[in-house]
Image (cartoon, rainbow, N blue to C red; front, top):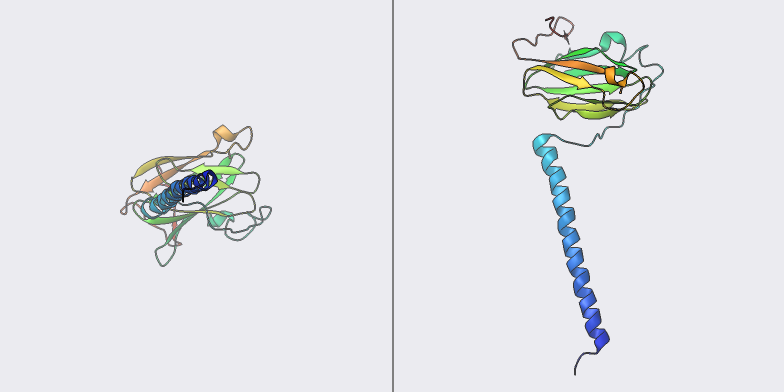
Length: 185
Ligand code: CUA
């Protein structure tokens, strides 16, 4: 009872198929575990919240009105910084953040798509008009970090940047309204 050539061929096809499926399975597992690993240990996540906001009314009232911009420490101690990215500046131009503390950054744009990153941190997001871009971070170093716009947004793109002043626990002191602004230097 010897095998017919086509039976042998079928067995060979099945073996290669299984081999490829196995290889692809390993690749997929490795990719997923890398995503989970960087998410858990380094807080690198894809932007996941979808929050809409009317770009035409940003500055008029609500969360991104002028008096609400910048760093705010809530009574429960949570730190939130709100920034408007607009052609061709960030408001505020300097952001005071605490070192070694969880911070929520919220960005919105009234005009075009901007991008924002804080050098040396995991903060890196697009700021799309109509949506709030939210990022969580904990900055380990103190000192001044550059926060440039990294999405071409028009002729003044290269002039669009802000500074992040990372303050130690002793320097990071909210005022009576919970606001923290950059120290004058
Ligand atoms: Cu804003 Cu480039």
